[in-house]
Image 1: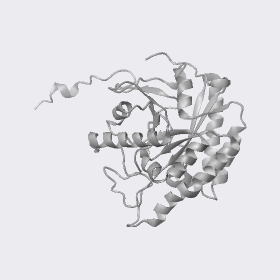
Image 2 (image 1 turned 120 degrees about the vertical axis):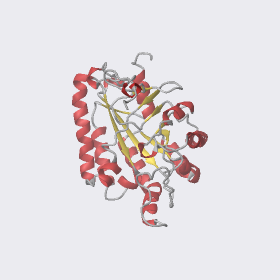
Image 3 (image 1 turned 45 degrees about the vertical axis):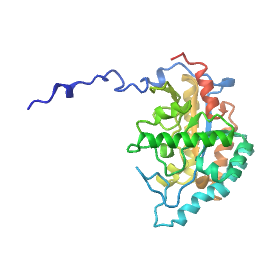
Image 4 (image 1 turned 135 degrees about the vertical axis):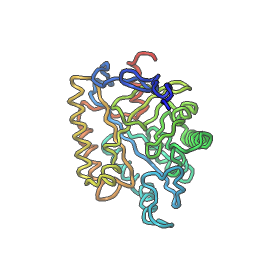
Length: 310
């Protein structure tokens, strides 16, 4: 039997892209980006503050960093909790010392369980991002749309109430998304998400509810990814971040402003044998006159101010 002709039709086939989620373009072909003060590089440091359940259901998938040993996996649970009890305060001291303005992606359950920690973050200053309910609510294929809608609405409602911030941004746990995630984020008042790492500058992401912005938070210099997954040393992590900054500063001289996004976790780099490497990075980047440090919403606003209307 001959194959139905419909199977040979590709209505979305066109130059550069086979979908309509976002427009295809090469980074080098875009208009030069202008950062405030003539900076060549925008620096965004994001801290993920997370609650890992001791007995995760892992449905539809288990997230990176989840418990791995038989219940109760106290060894890994208390390591994650260490970040929220100890590591985060080393982070805040380092940020204050080096004049760095971070953002905080916060699991809503963490904000509910530890209001004093949330208040410390708010007192320090910095933008709060939605980070789902906890580290056992993955936004992935197989999650019913109604269930995901409930998780997103519940998480954002609590964070907005407790923080007093509009909570414009979203980082999905594990950077996972279901096919419905962008639509649901836009429907719940999110302006940008940080899950897609296929670029180094913001770009428009189309949904049926209207456009979002994708603000890439690279995984390649994520401390957990480099140190835990790739098993590189913390010194190597620091050198990789500094190498990225050096390259992007050079690239920006001829092509316009660039973005360096750094993702860190207090249970990883907040350890006493690692914190000095975070401080090394912050100190060296902070001394460079061509670097502008800001939160993600501020960076996005500076970027979109020079972009043509959709």
